[in-house]
Each structure stands twice: as C-alpha cells, then as structure tokens.
Amino acid sequence: MIKKEIKFNNKRKEKLNFKNNSELDVMRKYKKRSDKNFCVEKGFYPLGSCTMKYNPRINEYCANLDKFLNINPNQKDEDIQGSLEIIYNLQESLKEITGMDYVTTQPCAGAHGEFVGMMIIKKYFENKKDFKRKKVIVPDSAHGTNPMSASMCGFQIIQVKSNEFGQVDIEDLKPLLDETVAAIMMTNPNTLGIFEENILKISNLMHKNGSLLYYDGANLNAIMGYTTPRKMGFDVVHLNLHKTFSTPHGGGGPGAAPVCVTKELGEFIPKPTVEFDGNKYFRNYNRPNSIGKISTFFGNFSVLVKAYTYILTYGKRLKEISARAVLNANYIKEKLKEDYDVSHNTKCMHEFVISGESKKEKGVSTLQIAKRLMDFDIHPPTIYFPLIVHEAMMIEPTESENKETLDNFIEVMKNISKEIDNNPENFKNYPSKTIVKKVDEVYAARNLDLRRK
Ligand SMILES: *Cc1c(COP(=O)(O)O)cnc(C)c1O
Image 1 (cartoon, rainbow, N blue to C red):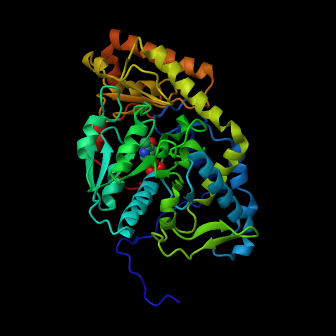
Image 2: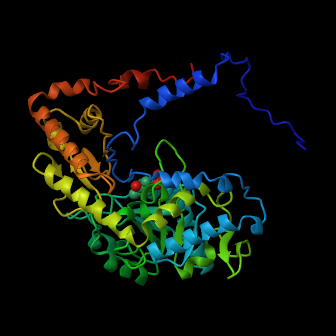
Image 3: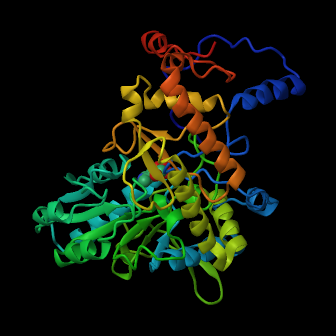
C-alpha cells in the first residue's frame, strides 16, 4: 500500500501530442536514428583506454536466454542455482586471471569498482584501528576517476610525478611515504600504454610503509595470461568487464566491474557473497565485517554472463588476446612514427599516445585531426588524455582488427599529416562527409537547449 502520495514538481502538466504511430513508423524512426550512430560493427574504433573490441554475438545469445531473462533475483537460492553457479564460476575465473582470492561482482562500472575498492581499503585500516592513513597517492598520468573515487571515500589525494620514461618516478614517490599514506592507485600498463617496470620496487616500498596498492584494471587487455596484478604486488583490483571481456559500451551502456582482493581483505568485500558449499550455491549475508551492500543484487547480471561466455570461449587462449592487442598497437606506432610525434619512443603495450603539438604549430589541433578521421569512417582516438601529454591522441586498436584495417588507418593518418602540411586551413570545415557535418560548437555552447522538440 502506498501511504503517502509522492509529489513531483517537474510532472508534465499538459498531455503530450503523440501521433498514433504504427509499429512500422516507429521502427523506421529508430532505425534511421541508429544508422546515424557509429559503433564497433560499423568501423575502426581506436578509442584509447576504452578497449572497444569486437563483442562476439554468442555473448548476446547467452545473455538473452529465456532462463536468464525471466528469473527474479528475489527468488530463493535453490530456484536460481544456475545463475548463482555462473556468478561463482566467473568469480573463480577472475581469481585465476588476477591472482586474487576474493571477488565481488556487484560494482556496475569501473569508477564504481574504484569506489568500492577504496571503501574496502578504508575499512581495512579502520579495522586495524589505524586512523592516521588519510592519503592516497595517484600518478599524474591517472584516469580522472581514480582521484575522484578516492576523494569520495574521504581520502586526501597526493600526486606523484611521471619520469622521462613515462613511468612513476620512484624518487618523487619516496618522500611522499609516511604513516598517513593508505594506498597508491595505479594502472599497469599506465595510460601512456607503458609498462611500469619498477612495479615490484614500488609495491615493496608501499608494503614496507604499511600501505596498500590499488590496481585500476582498465588496461588488463595488455597483460592477460602473462602476469597478474597479484604478482606485481597489488592488493585490490577492479576489472572493466565491459572493456576487456567484451560487452558493448559507451554512451552510458551497462557495465560491470568486479573487485578482486587478497585474502587479507576478503572479509570486507560487499555482501552478500556468492559461495558454494560443495553441494549448492548460496548467497552469504553472514559477513559481519563487510562494507555492506553496494548494488542491487549482483550488478549487471547480463554483463557477467557475456564476460563468462567470452572467458569460456577462449579458455587458456585468453593470453593470445593480449599478445595480439600489443602487437597491433606496436605495428601502428612504428608506422606512424615518421609522421607524428609519439609521446615516448619505447615499445608500447596495448595502446600508445601521440602528441599533436607539432601539428598544432602548423595550425591544426588534435581536435581537428579527430574530426577529419570521421570523414573516413574511423572513430577518433581518445584525445587530450592523458593530461601530461600536450595535444594527446591515445590510440588503442585492440586485438580484433585485421591487418587491412590497421593499414587503412595508418594510410589515412599519413594522408592527414600531408594535408596538414599542404592545406591546414581546410581543417576548419571538417568533418565534411559525415551525416552530421561540422557542428557550430560556439553557437551550441551559447544557446544550449536540451528540450525535446
Ligand atoms: C575506463 C577507465 C576507467 C573507468 O571505467 P568506467 O567503467 O568508465 O567507469 C578507469 N580507469 C581507466 C584507465 C579507464 O580506461
């Protein structure tokens, strides 16, 4: 029974004037709209750090099975044994992939996973009655969500610099360490696509200081099967299933970011956990030191099914995914080196960063290069990130692409470089071949109107 009527101030007052559309009319309208959209199925999508890989259809098939679609998470454990088994098996797979001991599948995005991971770290120190540890160290190359998540947990953020090799500067790190430091948050390879070679030295330093290490797993696609965050000395990890383990994402689509932790932190993970007693799968609410419930049920279950399907499809061959992702990135980087300034001239991992500064001196900004790429049915790379590279372009081809696609991208990029030399003024009018041509950003900013017309 609803006892009190909730009053919405923004409730619509007049009736909407909807036409009585037929199903066909509606289908056509949305088909037209979706045709204007760009997606992995339409073309190359080298959006650095986002791992826009191909999402095999079998994942969708499995996630859409009746048995998964028509259950209710409030059903009794004995009625949903199959679904619990999938969550449990996924947890076991992720333990093996990360080297960790406990997993929660509840977080619904990378940033959500970071927040949960930092809550676990906070609880760990509170449980030890160590209340001095209020600081979290974050490299200057970090994804913006890292400092944000830690600060939302009440930590104070301290920045550590990168050195000339694009890696955490140990000499800058050492003086920051004292008994007020709770943790460092890192991703490895980092957002420059460079492997942090000193990671073992860093994890030793941190642990000697009584601090923990948080691994932002968004870049796991570079190392899967070759090493684990555990071997590098990390204590807490989140994985972006919607990146590494293939779920369509972007535009706010559903995500899942399980958090995996070591034995020492296991008692703090969100409840309920999914466990197996040798006979049946069950939800365990009896976890007194848990940080509590952080999501409805177990997060985005369909994303978990897709990830599990993907892992089963590859099995022990998951390693080949990383090998090919790294090979593809190095191939493009080597070919583009003559025409563009790569941020760091070393072997890269699954992605690399170009600086468009010298192109800007010729009158063409990174944003304009990105817009020009759209004329060739290529999604622009991530731009202006990481912040420590001027005019940055971050290119991540992923393992899914064949050599023709990579070669086409390289050729387009080389031609753009020539265009910049010959006709830089043309870049003011790009993109010129897309469905929506160059937009008037100044007008849009000054006359912002988000109402449905
Ligand atoms: C994508 C990403 C995140 C955040 O993940 P979301 O699922 O978008 O919240 C964090 N760190 C890095 C390095 C990323 O690439």
